[in-house]
Image 1 (spheres, rainbow, N blue to C red):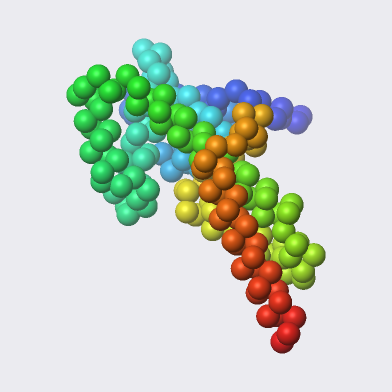
Image 2: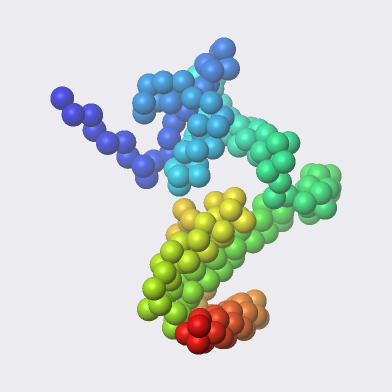
Length: 191
C-alpha cells in the first residue's frame, strides 16, 4: 500500500505535547528545532500548535531557532539591528516595523533572483567550459551569505521590472562584473 505524498502547499503541522516534545503530523514522529529549521530551509512553511489549547506557537519557536543560531555564532543580525528591534517594541514605530521588514526581505529576494538570473542569461562566458560549475559556486556563495534566503523564494514579480535607483546600481555593478569576467576570459585565452 503506497503512502500518499504530503501536500507541501499547506504548512507542515507540528503539535507540541504537554511534555514540550514536538510531533510531526505528516511523518508521525518527534522532531527537534533543528529538524524544523531544516524543513523551513527546504522551502516548507510550518505551523506549530499546542495540542491541548490549540494556541499557535509558531512565532515563539521560530524566534527560538533564530536565537539558537545567533548564539552559536551563525550571526546575520547586527547588534544595531537587534537594538533597533528592541526599541521598536517600546514606541509607536513598532506598528510599521513588521511591514518594513517584510518589504525589505522581499526586495532582497527579488534582487538576489535577478542577480542570479542576469549572471546566467546575459553572461558571454556562459559558453566557456566550466562556467556551470562556477555559476553553481556563486549560488552556493549567495546562499551562504544570506543564510539560504532567496533559494526557496519565488522569482520577482512584474513590479520588480519597473526599475529603481537600487536596480540601476545593481545593473552598474553587474556591468562591472561582466567587464572583469571578460578581462579574465581574455587573459585565459592568451595563456
